Every structure is written in C-alpha cells, then in structure tokens.
Length: 326
Image (cartoon, rainbow, N blue to C red; front, side, top):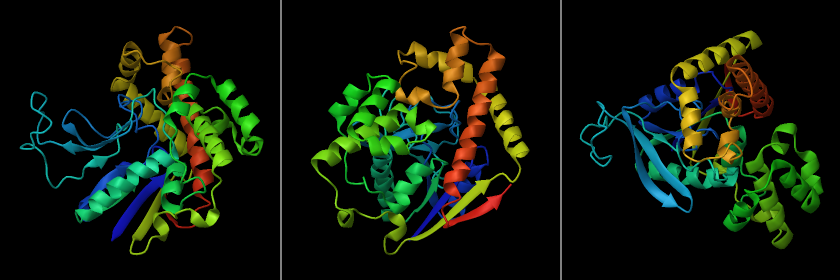
C-alpha cells in the first residue's frame, strides 16, 4: 500500500505536484494545511478550488465535517451536491478542506483523527492517499506519533478557554505546566489554539499520565505502508520572496478583501482561532481603517516569509524527506 506526502515551504507549488502524483497513482489529495481546514477561508488561504468544485460531506464527527471536494465538468450551482452526473470520476478529489468553522479550536490530535479516517477510507477503496501541505507539526504527528497522541479533545475546556485572550492563556499554561511553557517559541506563544491544546494536554496529563510504551506510533512505522515524502523549498531567499509577493497579488485580485469583509459580516470575531491565519489580520486592520492597504500587504508578505523560514527549520530535521530545490 502506497502513501505519498508532498510538503515543503509555502508558495512552492506543492498542490500541483500532489495532483500529478495522484493522477499517476489513482489517488486523492488529503490536505495538511492548518489554514485550509477552516470553512469560509478560501481565497486568502489559497484553496485549490473554484466554482466548478462541489463539497461532499462523508462523515460528521463531533465538531468536524469530514468530506471532499469533487471537480465537476461544468458549473452546477443550481443542482444538488448529491447529483453526481457532472463529476469527473477520474479527477483527484481533495479531502480535509473545510473541517471546522473559524471560531472552533483544532489541534494536531484532531488532524490525525481526521486524516487517519480518510487514509483508511481511501485504502479500502484501493486508492492512493497523497497528503499535501506545509503544516509540519500536523504531518509530524501523523507520520511519527507524539507523546500526547492518546489525549482526546476536552470540548468543555476548549469552549471556556476560547473566550480568553492570548495573555490569559499564556498565564494559565505557565501556572499548570511551566516546563512546557518555557519550551514554546514566539509563534506558539501567540497562537491561541496551540496554547489551548497545550493546556488541554497538561490538564489531562495531571489526571492520567501517559506511559510512553502505550502510545501508538504514527503511519511511518505501520507495517505494510510504503511512504515517500517529497519536500519542496527555494534555493534562494529572493525567489521565495518573489513567489510570495506574486501569490498575494493574485489572491487580492481574486477577492481576498471581499472575503475578509464577508467573514466579519457573518459574525466571526477577529480574535477567533481561525482568523489568526496569516493574511487575515492585516486585512482586518485595513478594513477597520487602522492601516493603509500597502501596509496590510507588507505585513501579510512579511508574515508569509517568516512562516516559510520556520517551515524549513522544522522540516530539515526530517531525514525521510526527499528534497527538491526550486
């Protein structure tokens, strides 16, 4: 049984490569981008879908909606999503877009549960899973397993913590698990849903400590799987910056500002977990007349470049990745 993984830096064309692999191996794509798991966040996050794609829900589990996007032969906006007459049956589907809404928390544990369900589903259908995305923490948890794998979501705790500000979450984690707090980098310390998951883990471990020998290992160790991991990265920083700048321009042309405005009109708050996604905060600041559009674009670009650097830092430690430099 084959499983392919395509990861790497942002703006390197991972999805294009994943589609090519899927077409050659009778496969479907499984999203591994922590920004594209959110519903309604389409243009800014760069989901590879348009009006000719339709979402088919396969399983609703707790707060999650697990399904896939199917490309259709033509626009069928007036038809039911259950009308499959116009689908392209041999065209790869994209799974694990739009799992949750922007105001819900989501962790690497949650991702592994969803991804494992889809992987089993595809393998049972004799299809090849092609996991694609640059969220390496999700990927690392899925492939190799981590110590906290057996700690499930605590929805009541998440609901209570979701109301708190980042500084309050930091204070809670520092109080109950100072050792973990001290290990967090700047990005983790300012990411509310990661802080919530850390608090969730610390709370559970205080009650039910995990035994290292009892934790399940990730996919990479499971018997029978042949896994190839491809990584894409830029050789020169100037090429990275240029690619990111071009992509942001394209997303603005596709309606990124209108999307940001629509999300706020839907009643979501700028403090919601999903809206901490790169790109949205500077657009919200512009829409609220706090900064100029030029400054918003500059902040967006800077955040993307910094994210790409972090991606490479984490991924280069993985000796199983077969790198392709652009």
